[in-house]
Length: 64
Image 1 (cartoon, one colour):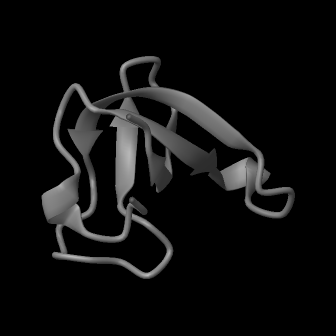
Image 2 (cartoon, rainbow, N blue to C red):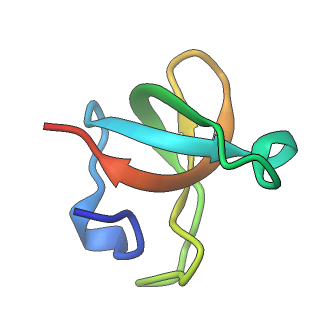
């Protein structure tokens, strides 16, 4: 499942995000969602979230 729909993303969900500085390389960072920062129902680049580690980025993948 990708991270473009806000309804798919909940607090305490394990996700892979791409940080702003990693957008060119596409390097993904794994973590657990603390806050959902995007207000719209969907976003083509991925919903922006803050992880419990404090990292902020767009969700590329929801981990099982």
